Length: 598
Image 1 (cartoon, rainbow, N blue to C red):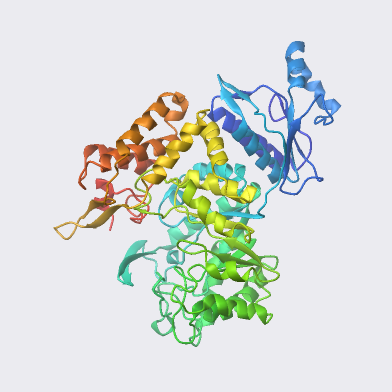
Image 2 (image 1 turned 180 degrees about the vertical axis):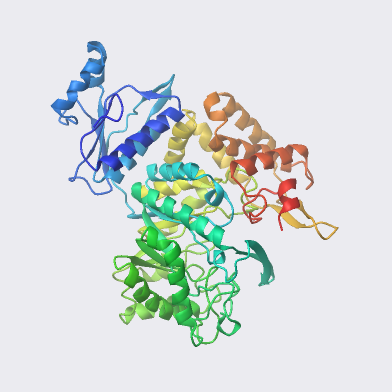
């Protein structure tokens, strides 16, 4: 098979291998480059299933193309063919998806110059240290993951697969199921002293969302990504009867959840999950189901609490039996996010279940919290027969709205966080609410692959590949500057004095942003050396906007300026924000957004 003039596919599933070759060539085309060496792609069953090897095709022990394929030499003149033969390389993988991982490494270590792509010096064999490398793209806030055109989303999934992510989670929210046929509307309510929002959707939006998510899940599988779906243990819809409603924990945000301990509650929860499965999950067949304790879910009634080791555990066991009727090969992940946030002994109670031989259905524990990794599993280890994965949160740190400032990049912070669990975890499910933390995704992809928290090399690869720049050490310093200025900057969005329209005022750290001006100058000097091709890309623009915005914020005294409004408008378009419906947490507070949102 010859998908291009000098890329050869030796074996493997033709559709998957051709897709990998296409993705590789499209990334070169994006950079206005062409490959001028022979590149052979093949599946080698001797390699680890997710491992790859990059090496020389000719002149050594490896020979990556068959004699019959060498007939392609008629496409070249004699001198050109000889040169190609002397510099040919191969990418071999233990599976088709591993070939894609190898191509990602080839792209990130290559040299892009004067319209030519030259493979870098990296040669060898590599396999992931962590087997579970998932990304959860929150697709229910009218953000990029929710609203970007399908082709853009598919391309972003390709980028994540090139980084080595091997599982995908999207969210098909219960709010899209309504007992009536009214159009979507955003309902406001309060829990724990905070204003929260609940999107009640109509059937058209429900079906449109199901179709979109199904297509993305199926394309993810084509890239080697397993599908992760929610099986919500208190799943309720807006028509949940009052006598069946859960008692919301402080951390829960859904007013229509069902209490599984109420008479008829469990039956309604199973019925509601089947309804959601039939609309979406049946069309892509999840490989994993995850049970989530709080935020979406939870009940604090006397019969359910402590939720994480009582009501949740009992209901999860029933849910497993129910899910296996439809998806007998699925595996199950038990989420522990925010366990013991009220010191209720949830971790201890859960481990006691496992010690008694209960919960054999649990394949993985997902453990993480709002800041440091939970102490209990670090002190007591991972229960026998289970895997432990983490839940890195890369969007919501230190600034609000987190989609309002451009790039969020925090390598030293996340290196520290990953370092706490790297010895006991088998990977993680990274949580993302947009593309503004793209750098952080690259960092965790490297952490999961290497098994350690070294963060400078993935930034060097990001600089070379995404920015086509060899000024890697300067780029590292720019990212460190963004991290230094990150914490404590908030747009405090509130109703204006007229009591109807939203407005904002700015909260800065006590010492302000004293280095913003000098940081911006460094960014400008760096940009001057970038290719014009790069300067307009969203990955660079959001980095540059961040520096420009920090400088503007440091001098605007909390009031909107035309410069700031222009930057916010650019981010709004870049992040594909649905101005009418996006939640404030992900939306840049442009004047248009504040005048049209609830």
